[in-house]
Image 1 (tube, rainbow, N blue to C red):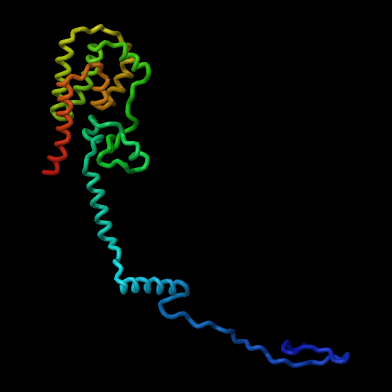
Image 2 (image 1 turned 90 degrees about the vertical axis):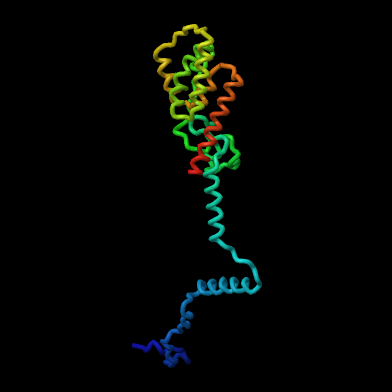
Length: 237
């Protein structure tokens, strides 16, 4: 068998064997990377370290991430403890839920928002078309007689001004003395009772056709003031 290190050359129609030097079997090897660095990662680390050192030599201020985080935490805590106007009196006296907070998770109006920032269980209860037509057909005395028991029940867990407001409406109803005795079916009354029980105090109050007298407005303002004073008392405690 021919040696693989030899090659055949045709010379004048005769085959002759020509010897060539054997190739070296030793493979070239690259030098190992410096200790502690591996390829491009090591170069990038050296580059970043050089930038930091250069910035320090030129006197550039360094970012203080700890203080920034502390400041942000303090701001978030202040936002949580500050009650915006729409949240005051939650859940019985507050406004409807804030759409920005429900969708985006934050409100661009912050502490000045006129809508509630607290959690609400389910959707805000509303009267359907038939129930609205029923209230339009009722007299003022019948409407007050229907709504007052629900207002009185909700006022039990509210500041004292809520009970004063209910007593004011009871005296007003007694002075009317003009009930018409409208008949409401049991099924419609049960469905209406379910909605009124889940409504807040202020929403039931707004269903009344009664003209808001100055005394009624003053009692509602007193109730809001009592709700506003409660967080301040808790902070002092």
